[in-house]
Amino acid sequence: IKESAQVLSNIGELLYAEGKFEEAMNFHEQALQIRKEYYSSDHPHVANSLRNIGDIFYKQDKYDEAFIYFQEALTILEKYYNNFHVDIAKCLSSIGHYFREQRNYDKSLESHRRSLAIYEKYYPYDHVCIALTLNNIADILCGQDKNDEALHTHRRALTIHKQFFQFDHIDISKYLCTLGHIYS
Image 1 (cartoon, rainbow, N blue to C red):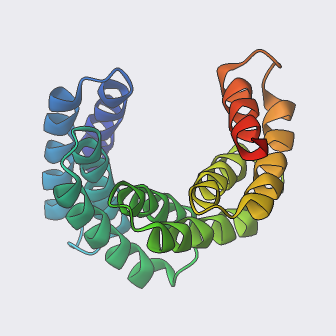
Image 2 (image 1 turned 180 degrees about the vertical axis):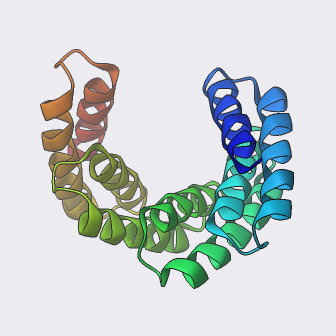
């Protein structure tokens, strides 16, 4: 039965990627229900379902609902993994996006920096998750007019991304555009 929860979650992820948020929500809620029945309510699989549901709420501009799910997931994950695990980094990134949306840039920056510290512990220095997190941090720094730090951070992210993508890839063009804004 626990395998069916993973299948439901995977289907939910596919639907989420296609932008079918209501359908994705249905599958993630079913997965959450099964996981709560099969595992304890403070198990990491439950936390991952909670974060997935939070991500859907976030995409639907239901930020406060999303934050509740992110916080609950983070509490479970930090208790279970003792503050350092990739799933915690993912959750912190979601929370960082929430705080940025709320214009609480200091808390957003703090969440993304914590996420980066975890990713840097688990992944090689040139992993794409590190580049994406660096980009999030640089965008916040740029918004705070901390241009020197933003520039350094964006350059590091761009260097990593260039290893994985062609020069004409949209992510590369976004980095270059942001660098242009910093310079102007």
